[in-house]
Structures are given as C-alpha cells and as structure tokens.
Image (cartoon, rainbow, N blue to C red; front, side, top):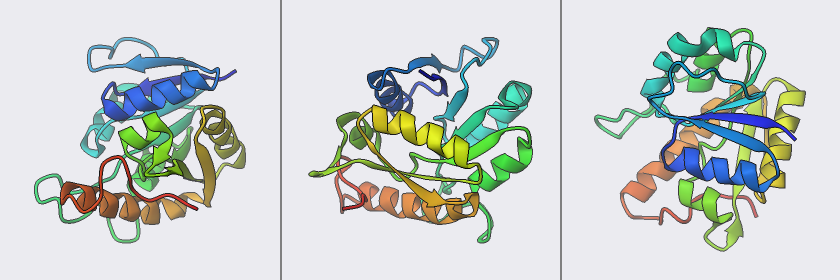
Length: 190
C-alpha cells in the first residue's frame, strides 16, 4: 500500500483521490487552508492549476524532496485560452523538475478530465492515464496506483514527452470548452 498526498481539492483532486482509495492505497487531500500541514505521502500529486505551481514550490519544496511528484497541469494561457505559456521546447513538468531537483517528477492525468477519471471511462472506452518521466521506478509506482484504481496506465516515455502530453491536454481542453467533445469523453487509447 502506498500513501498518496494530493495537493488540491477541486474536481481533479477529488477524482484522483477516489481512484487512489479504490486501489487500496491511503490518500490525504490538501486544500488552500492546509499550508502548515506536512506532506507525508510517498507520492504527491499536484492537482492545482498551472499558475499555482510556483506557490506550491515556494511553500513545500523541502517537503517534496525525495518524493514522487506528479504534475497534472496544463500550462495554458488562461486569459486567452489559445496557447501554452511554456517555451516550445519545454514543459511545465520540465520546469517543475528544475525547481525540485531532489524529487522524481512525473507528468500524468493532464490528458484526462475529472469526469473520465471518476467514471473510469472516456466515452465508451477505459480512461487511459499517460505517464511521462525519467525515473522508471517512480513511473511503475504511479502506474500501479492507477491500475489498482481501475484505470489504464501507459508509460509515454521520458519527461521530455511532457511537452507533447501538455499539447494534447491543451487541445482536448479547447475542444471541450468549444463543445466539440463532451467533458465525459476525450482522448484515450484503444
């Protein structure tokens, strides 16, 4: 059994929490009022919007050292909703890894919606969580948690693949916001 800390109590934090618990792992959620509460999970999932990552790092960098840290963000321009705000050759997860050198940073859950995580289905197909990262053991640990919770986990490669995952997440968000796909659907692997 793995202990998972989730920073963020919104739709994604709640949905991921239910998957973690369903798989027999323990989970604790951290909301905005829990800044003084210590993060104790072996795996820490950052279920916050991209702009909040800087504050999480400022508040908790020391606590995240040595842990598997999962970035679920999509670094989109929230004012225009028409572009990513990271350099074309970079990613939010790559930036996070640079700020947390003692952590094992992974990218995951950013190509899923809360509804598909909660239901385990994207349309009629199983929800697929793509995982990118450079630490094979960290990816295997997260994949085990995801699979135990009833979702499909797929290793998408090294952390440099986070850029493509973020672009895919951005595309999926814009399609859903434009009502071209439902929030209960999205991309998955068949």
